Length: 190
Image 1: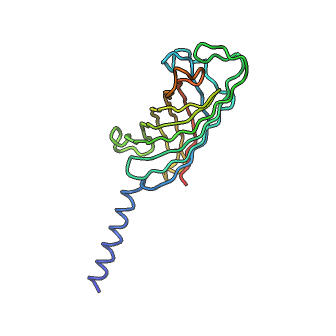
Image 2: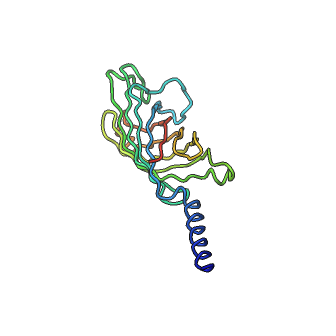
Image 3: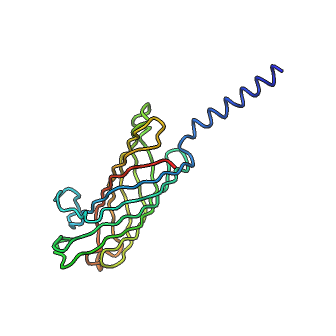
């Protein structure tokens, strides 16, 4: 009887250790928030800090953390450039709606910087996207951000990220060109 009790205790202890070490494995997260677009054609996201599109700044995404530190995210954003706004040095004669679908692979590396802190995490991301202002274009994306958990269970958080989007057909694309997109979002564990 002692051997069976000891064996059951070891099995339960093993499951407990395994569950704690894979806390971020195969978890789903949803995010919703706001975004701003800087498309000045200056190659600097801070050259003119007040010239950002934010007319319809909706941002939403779904993320799957599939292994420790790695995740994949699918996001959708909407925004609006108003008549008179400037994109790549061109003053817009009418309103334009911005929409994008982006797929990113993320690597959370905060545990390497702050190994004893779980409430804040830093990440880098890269991926591909499809966006449209006047015409549709494909972009290669690279960026990063920080995520702060607001509760101990790490189920509600705030994310701040910036993504540089490099248009594939930027020479012929007109206003559908390279740009930066910054997000502030609420994150929820599902």
